[in-house]
Image 1: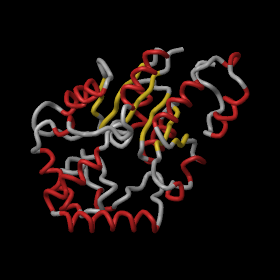
Image 2 (image 1 turned 60 degrees about the horizontal axis):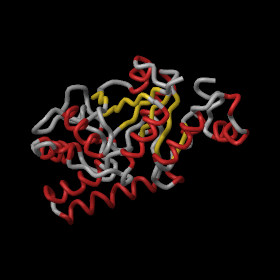
Image 3 (image 1 turned 120 degrees about the vertical axis):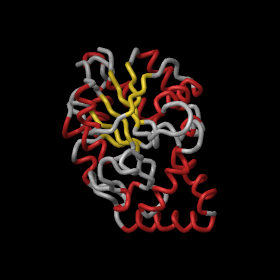
Image 4 (image 1 turned 30 degrees about the vertical axis):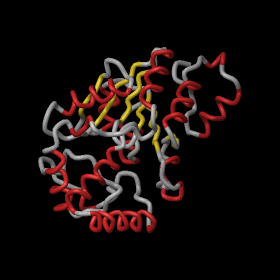
Amino acid sequence: MTLRIGFDLDGVLADMEAELVRQAELLFGEAMTRRLQERAEIGAADSATAPGAPADPAAESAPGSPLAEAPPIVRLQMTARQQRRLWRHVKAIENFWESLDEVEPGVVARLAATAAERQWEIIFLTKRPASAGFTSQVQSQRWLQAKGFSLPSVYVVQGSRGRIAAALDLDFVVDDRPENCLDVVVESKARALLVWREDERLLPAAARRLGMGVVGSIDECLGIMTQVDVPRADQPRVVDRVLRMLGFNEPTGA
């Protein structure tokens, strides 16, 4: 059976936050940006955000507002006004989404090679707002192609990741936001893999209990999905143990 997998882009494959911090330094100055980073670190250390709740209350926006379509900025604890100013600045940068680095160097090419070898169908999901230049979809496609993934399928989303996973009949969704993974678990039959590169102590306590698999890197994620993509008759006992640890009781395609 061919696996159908949805991959988020920013925070999973693309390092959006590092570039946003750099743009914040240009806009607000290094001293102010450093204070915003320190506030975010203190807030994260004080308490882990529960699934479904925003990391920063200022990031909440009504539908149709300038922030409603923008991805959250975790590394900077900004006011809503500062976020609007930063996103206005970013939207004026021509082909901004093509300028990002990979979170893990070479990861897109490794994903492309694994998907080709295993004959997986990959759909890239993103909530990127428009910027000057090409559409955010085309910029994302060009970025993925430049990093080694030919003919990428990119879906610019606004709604629940769970409903999208159900509509697209996905087997896995890989995301770095607990609330998105929770949507997938609750509203679809897909398995959610949460990419968590932060301190394990900051991981929402309910993440694993609610059925999310938690990985520390895309390489770990690919290793798990490769093991899952094996008929039960051919699976060694160690694979079943890995699946149980992640909360997955049955292998896809079994």
